[in-house]
Image (cartoon, rainbow, N blue to C red; front, side):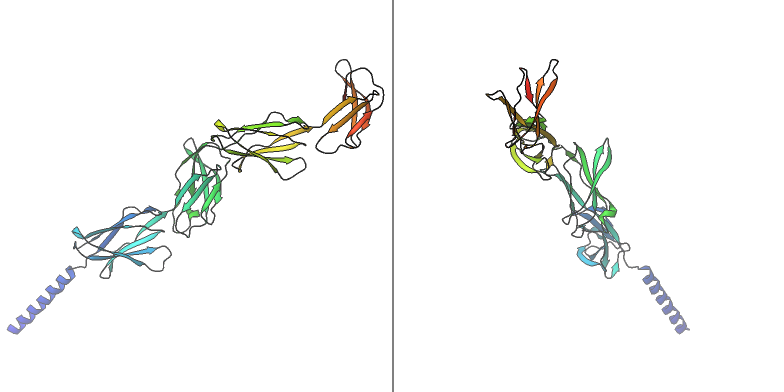
Length: 359
């Protein structure tokens, strides 16, 4: 009888130990991020808790960047009061984080998304340069230039990124507020869409006006204009296209005065188109200056009329007309002659006493 009771007691003790073992579950780990969206090159806080509340436990932090086949050990942290731990992490691409203790892993993988940085600056030539800053792998994609129009952002242009992740937007922009955006589709795997800071832009337009659009051969034309918002001493380049030529030639370079004003004298010998450039890249409108041949007329001792026509090219063989001015201001052609060598001609017929000209 005593042996039976002893066996029963042993069974009860074993059951009690098994029940206690079942109740003593392993501690768990939880992790979280202070922000799940991180600007490239910046940090976010990873925090966690060991459910047992133990202090001084060594927790291994694992990082799992997008595209990696397995996580890697990032660092080891030590639990403090109530089993808590924390550290700063700086992901360069979308990265998942988890914690481990004695082979036990935190129940959830927390992920931090990465937003590229877009820096926008105004270059000296008036262009807007946008550079996307992210991991070396981001070297493609298209960015958009947007203008603030009464509180709404309107896309006015797009450019593909160069190998150095830079996009340049032209200098023919009106005054306004601009920004550059990169969509999540263009950013590619591992990155979120991005928006740059806004930039207040002042245009760098240059004007060009001649004092006349028609000049007598051998005379000069004064070109003038203004470079918006420029300082005195800014270089303005004048280039010209002579009639019949497809390429331009450098005429001269001048400096702006106070207020960005500039002037330059040119002496075209044939119809010529002119353009002014600010910093050699921002052009003005083109203007055309026509050239009128210079005709001299004189009376010889025998009463004949001699004429010579000067221009930027030979006019030998061209016809000239001797005209008389009639009452009422009408010009009547009296004779015609062909220009000979040196673009000269002589009218030999006796002439009336009247106002004359050669055309």
